[in-house]
Each structure stands twice: as structure tokens, then as C-alpha cells.
Image (tube, rainbow, N blue to C red; front, side):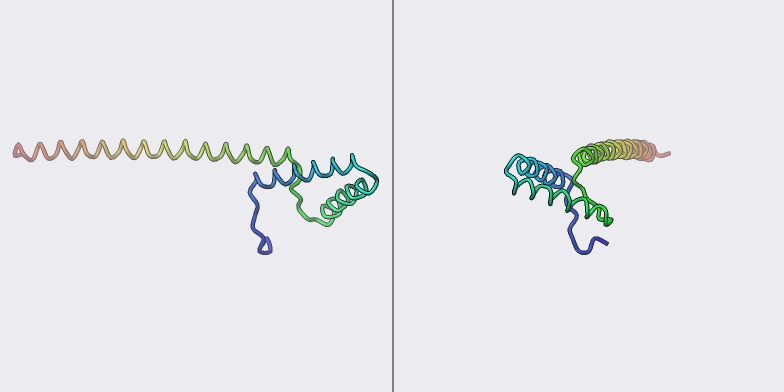
Length: 109
């Protein structure tokens, strides 16, 4: 159970991770107080990870997950298209048989 939290989309997770990375980089480039803030942020993440909390702050992993999601969606769409074509072909075939049967009936046999 997620504890009532809404699961963030991968795109949003990526955006937040990149924003946090940039913020830490800008703090590290600043004065001593900013560098201390950056250090605290990094240590905070490290402690959360050590306590078993799942952190999605690795941009490469998130990007790979997004690519996987897109591939899965494309594969699913392709399968659905194939299925719809098969259904359409079956319907055409049945209609053809029905037409043939009706023609036979008209001829009286």
C-alpha cells in the first residue's frame, strides 16, 4: 500500500529528479552555507535510502522506464490492430457465406 499517496507519472518523476540535481549542483557552486545545504540534501536522500525508502532520483533509470513504457504501449497497439484486422476478416467471411446462402435460397435449393 502506498499510504494514500498518488503514484507520480514517470515523466513527472524525471522532471523532479532533474530539478533536484540542478538545485544541488547550483548550491554546490555557491558559498559555504549553500554547500552545506547541498550536503544535507544529499545526506537526507542517503539516509532515506538506507532506511529502506524507495527513491526515484536516478534519471537514467527513469528514462529507461519511460522507454520501456512506450515500447510496451506500441506493442500493445500493434497487437490490438492485428486483432481488429482478424475480427474484420472473420466478419467479412461470415457475411460472404451468408450472402451465398441467401443466393442459394433465392434459387430454391
